Length: 114
Length: 115
Image (tube, rainbow over all chains, first blue to last red; front, side, top):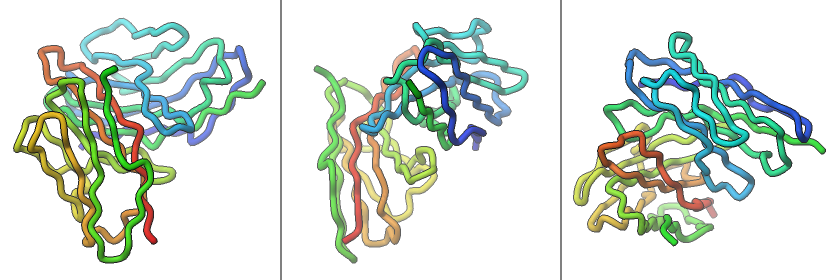
């Protein structure tokens, strides 16, 4: 089974600053999908951004962007102009092209300070 | 609005009791999933279903059972065989269309505790 590792249990960023959350994964597959989900205190899981492995271009969604390094099996999330509402748990997830279930990392808790 | 509804929000189980968590979706999604979340852990897959009347075990299926009699519904039963059921349970669904990068959509979760 593919494993997803988030090496930063907690991160802190000041409002309006930029922060990068790291994620690495282990797979022997060449075609797969990667996701970042946000879980605020309400516990709802919200999709932040997704990346197809066959695409070399890094995905971007407004203030959120990824740095996808396929050879290094790395998928980091950059949050620009951080806002108080960005405070949450962030989970990195992997999905094989041949399956539909997600493999999640253990998450990174992001604290945003004024 | 389309979405996934989980009920109840909070559930308490007595020793030796089976309890059922409800999950309903009106997104017309083919696939549905159940995940368990423990403190300091990511989500772990319990069961998933890609089609009515068919489902597969995930990584931690022991002590749980599911059914998929309708496309919209995927209830999870936590049986008395599950010795450590206290956790947060999340239901999700996704499309199985040609664009297989479709993300999973999640419900708001059910918190299960032991009395």
